[in-house]
Amino acid sequence: MNEDSRITIHRYSLRAVTADYLRALAGMALTFGPLVVFKVGSVMVYILAGVGALFLLFGFRTVLRHLTYVEVSAGEIRIAGPLGRAIRWRDLDEMSLRYYTTRRDKTDGWMLLKIKGGGSMVSCDSSLDGFDDIVACARDAAQANGIALETGTVTNLKAMGLVATSTGEP
Image (cartoon, rainbow, N blue to C red):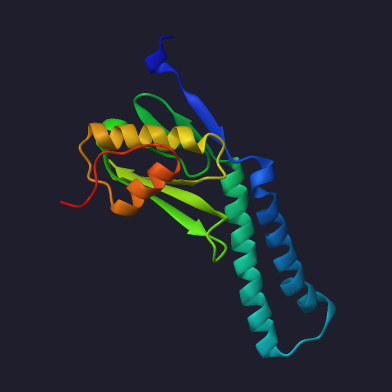
């Protein structure tokens, strides 16, 4: 096997999704629990059931995320799992890297990478093991394909220590 055919596998660890599992369980307990334990009015039934359904969907999404893994090779990025898809690097036509802060002083948060190409879209966040390596591969493909990157994406690449040369500005 040569270097070009090497595939790296990246996963969301249990540690990365534990807080989401706990949020989903707590939300379902706080919404479905009163429906089972107490006699509530019909309006409250709809409200609690509706909010509980949202927590149930969030829990389902968390399970899907935990079962999903990302395969990266010299030729493509592939999301493997229940909702799999792939983008060949040569087909990449859009890349964005956003930072979402959880504090006013911007000291804590996460990054989200979105790439598009060949009719597919792949996104992953910085809690994914090997996220920096995936971003570097996407940056290399974007540069090889002559894709103009938005200023925010270039700023975030620099913050990660990954210099990008193209921007969406003239």
